[in-house]
Image 1 (cartoon, helix red, strand yellow):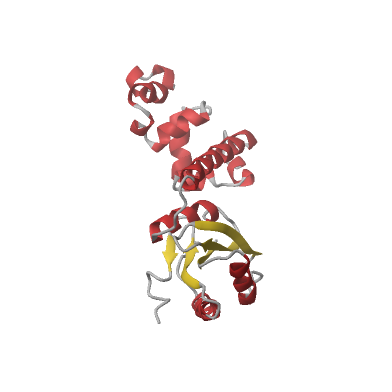
Image 2 (cartoon, helix red, strand yellow; image 1 turned 45 degrees about the horizontal axis):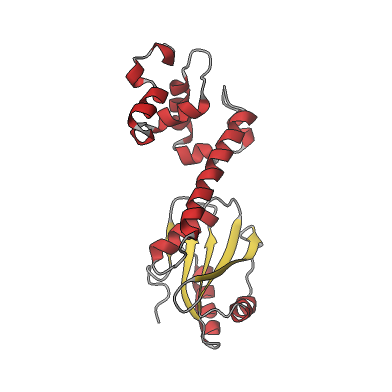
Length: 226
């Protein structure tokens, strides 16, 4: 049965207009974006199938063009739509955060970092430079590459903090593999950096590990005590 044959109150578009987007399921929202289904499948059926195959809206929206095109009814047009929707959402969240970037709590930092690093497919290291009121002075990328290639030099971070007149900083990097658990090298590096920054009266507030689904604060986990 096509969606046009459904009772009006159950059709995704009419349901959205009557009750708001929040009343729709993931499949119904996706069906509106897809607009049409395939032979034998309504847009809602196709949406449910795709969500079941990928596991979540986030994973579906993050699929590359080649992966998406392997599914019937999907192609470059769908990939483009999904990429645009995801980027619009990221920019809206960025606008909300830009209005008042005071990184005074682990949650505020986690939200900011998830926005900037959660989507990265390779390992990226960054520094958040803060003033005395924990206002963000700047976010600087330290390195980009695979885990094996990603080398961050402590002296460069110290110089960056001094150049930006930062009172404190937070460092962060993503784990593209999906686990936010700090590695032994993460822990050792953090300890060395903390000591080096202390010599120039700059505080290392935290080191965050970011994945698409979670963000780990090494300070909250007890890795930065002492």
